[in-house]
Length: 179
Image 1 (cartoon, rainbow, N blue to C red):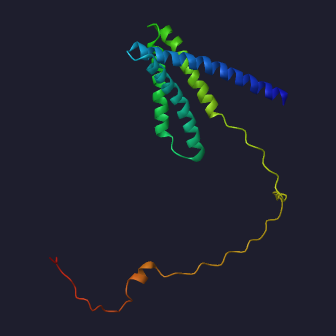
Image 2 (image 1 turned 60 degrees about the vertical axis):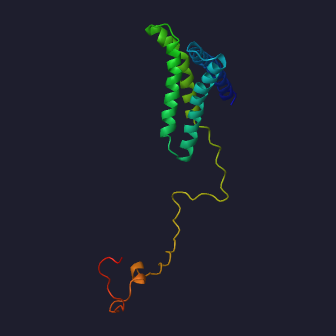
Image 3 (image 1 turned 90 degrees about the horizontal axis):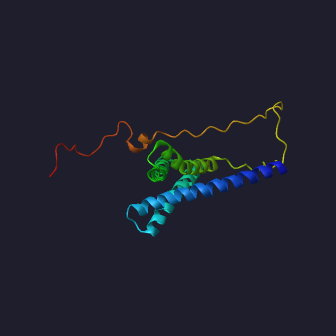
């Protein structure tokens, strides 16, 4: 029990450290790229918040939708789009070399990986309540169940709409179009 709590505490500290540092780097790169392209400072921070937090929100939305069986296609596409925006800002701010791009992409990729791991973990299920009566074992005799009484037979719906056979109508046949 103590070992599990210590492990959970260590995981939480690592999660917070990586999340804060990677998030700060990703926010800064999006902000700096926005400002470098002519936007005011506050819009740079607004863009950074929008891009980075949308990725987290969309991950949460996917998890919630999967929980209730709703489709996640469009939300998944949006998540990929916002992740690519974040990654593009990282790479655009980098030194123009392969290593510069790789090193600049690390915060964004780490942040997204962290979000994916946290959102994909399954919370522990609470222990099942003890039943009031003992469960039947596999070797117990099955109980006989009486069959349900047969349902009453109803005439087909078409019989209720059509006149009985052999009955003639007094209506004249209409042929052609009436104007």
